Amino acid sequence: MNEEIIRKRLSPRNTWLISASVLAASMALSPVYADYDKDDGDKSESRAAGEVVTDTWITTRAKSVLLADREVSGFDISVETRDQVVYLSGEVENQSQVSHAVELVEEIDGVESVDATSLRIATAVDQVRDAVSSSE
Image (cartoon, rainbow, N blue to C red; front, top):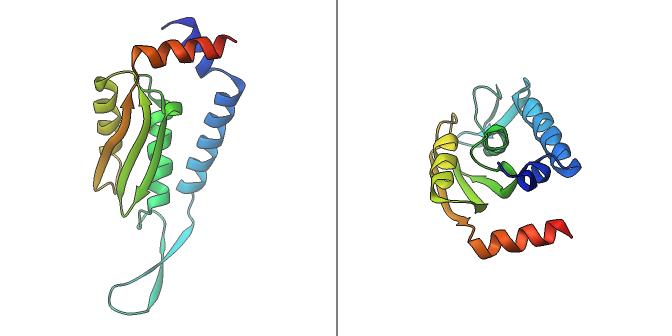
């Protein structure tokens, strides 16, 4: 791995993002209660968070998994979840990273499907531009 990528991943901003993500994940996994509406009326019922997988939980878990993985840069991938469908966007280095990110997220409990059509593969021009701008 080249030194520039290592420096970028270990910057204070990235360290802060990792800490914030870990905190968010631990909060999402704590025994909180979620209200949801049943299809059979306006009746609302409380259940443990472990019993109801919410889009917020899926998003937090997906982001944490991507940040912890060494093959993809979780800093460059945005995650959004709607109705248990995870949408990945951002920039990766190659198609292998796209496939790997999708595989990681598909393994998360509650994920119906993963849409990675907004994940862009960085071109050589993009990588040179980023290298020049980070060295200034």
